Image: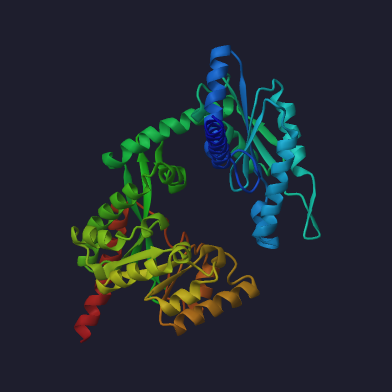
Length: 464
């Protein structure tokens, strides 16, 4: 009998231990390890539960999204460990400030959220701003990054968790654009913006197969002769109601929706088909296309691009692919494979935004890059500011020493053009020469220039 009781007691203890272990595992799976707050997954589940309860009981739920101001600056100056210390302290503050009915979560990075049933959301939001902005001493330095807070309320603003989070994020973004250290509550203005965005999303999905996203072309000028030697391909949306839209109006949205690759491919194919005739007739030598870092991170990118190029009449030797330093920093090995594969087919590779990052020269020394494009931020003051002029001149000298050609973009006046020409810049582009134009306008300009140059070419042929 005693053995039976002992066996039963051991079984009960074992079951209790298993239950405790299971509960601990579940708690750890729902907790952010750095701050001790609820993590993103548990937060999403809790928000849905709160909305269900509010829907059944006729209550309201307020969502506060908190984002630190200048957190990246703190990480850059004091290091990531200092940033972690600040986040851990903020986690304690938020947990201590929340009532029993509120849930505090860390959504990731320096973004936090509070689920609450408070009625006075403005007062609660201001309290959060004040709480997060209180100074903290880290490594002997007093830091106070400040906070931006966005607020949305169920059911007044949104009917489900997805829209509630989206609207709170929109309110937060409005604060961030105004400098931070304050709060914003979702309102009619943001609702109208949300509706405009939703409509634009639907129209963008339709625009790509409809051929509304078109290639435009900006001339690239030879510094010595002043002749157009190439074009850079740029995307424009020929919207049926709003007219011509620049990339800033739709590219960020396309990236969020996962449509940027489809846009890049459509613009690339149309541009190559249009420019192939110009190259064949000797009107230009090169066609330059930008590639997004997301596409470059696809291991099959270069093979796919060559395949698309082969389906057009544009020679591979006439194509230049522009890549950014961002991609090189993300995966140098993959960058090398893409660049070498393209170079083997005769496709040129240009390093865009040259002069803005530390790894530019390293890339030129170790990768088969044939062209660099001086960033427009460097061009703005050349010929006026002596220090900037010396910096750009040294960059040009370094690039020439490595055997690469140089294109300056963003040339907007004669002083800039004269300076760049005098310092040996090979090619230039910018509003001083020509703005981007549609294919028909580019075709007309190239043919007019060719007609004007023909008498001089004929005279040279006759002289031979």
